[in-house]
Image (cartoon, rainbow, N blue to C red; front, side, top):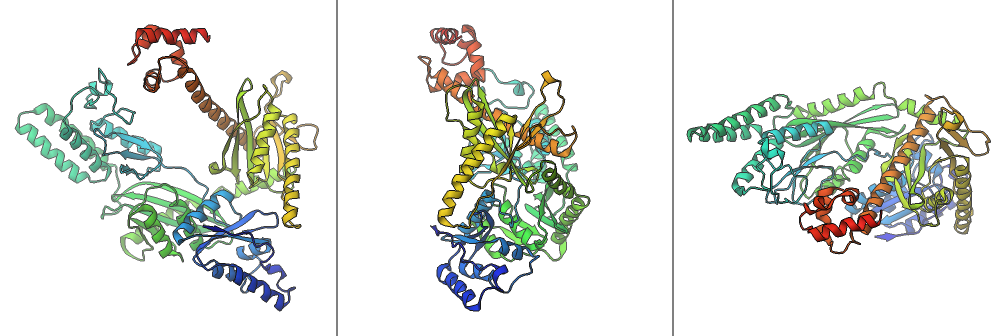
Length: 639
């Protein structure tokens, strides 16, 4: 890839066209014609502050960018508003159009441009994974689909539905239930063997053919080939009865009965037994509701909905943006994707998806027949969700927050910051991001504090905010977990860092000025003063702002604060657990990698090991009496 410098001020603003002479206009256009390449790539428009406001992909960058300099669009249109804001252009060349798709998606996630249609739902839906390359495969719940040769079934739009399916499989079939990926040998089988729900390959010699037959049955069930599965089970039942093995025949009969009850609850929507994603879109003003139906082997397994807000976007633009952003993630790729709206870049997107999934993918907008009915079903679901939607209330909430908190601009992008430490040691910081009042988890950040010297909340908060500002793409508002002192510290850091950034930017462009993020802090009530409500501290105000307990702005700030605190505590615990495990067990003579793993698998964590007796430690494979005494002495000396 080739990265080119921004072409600042070479792009003619639409608002200046009437004032510019034809000669000057032609000079600017000619400059762009000479400078812009004709290959595929990604381009982005930036505003006077340097913030990216739009990211686009093009087969031919020169042709696509020059199209913005054609006839003047209406000032009320999205393109017209964007070109009024645009002050510069940046572009990146790619070797193929497929690379441009991936780069465009990554840049949109990174910068969240104002004039792009952005998919903010980054949840990974659960799937069931069956690795048939293992000697004794097990069924596991995962949220990421990898190209590792295993079989993935899903996605399940509901975790409850997925667990219900797994419970049925666990009850009917006898796959091993061990949580460990590699089979660990045991002296005695677990309770699942006693309940006749597992063959216990961990402690019994199980013929590979017998176990593989069960794996095939589970695969048939998850693929929706239930008639074929029941026919095979009936054949096995008849054979068992013919050999007078009535106990085995009765067990298979119970399996068939349980499967039939499950099948009766499923709804067939496609007699062709295909894997399909059906995407329907409904529009109401500036709101666009997308619903995707997951059809697996002809059965409707779940649904998901996504809401976009763009007052001037066309339905076809929303559909195209959804396809590119949703399928750029690690999601299950069906053979067929049905859409309700036509898209311009259909061939390029289909080619990209085929390369990405390493299989043939069909994207189709049906006009008649069974597939048209499926699309109509998805559109009906989207329309029902759109009626009475709460998005208007969210917009009102942002406007209310601006007014109540006395902010200079609407806080559409808020970041909450918090720190966590244990008596000043192993301090960490966390930044959580909320866009339009909802979490944007892709922008969450963790920081491990570099400063040392004991407990210094102000110093650690200042360090974290300074490092966060250095990463760029700043929010409209920082929310600090703390009181007036924390607010003052963060305010000073922001002012200092923004002055430095402004000085650097003046060297490049005298018109460039970075928007300064605003900052507030929120503190919990002081019980010693008999306070009952959280307090919000504002810059330039002596006393805190006290809102009603059910005030929507206070509830939003508390939600962001609690999310930042939760993230910081979880990151601190995870980091502390790794460090404690590494420092303590590695310091004990005679404990290597294998024995350390056995100890942690047996006792689960370092605290349990430190409290274990000599007799308890000797139960761990590889731990002798002498080594057990050494472990107990080590933790006893450390208190």
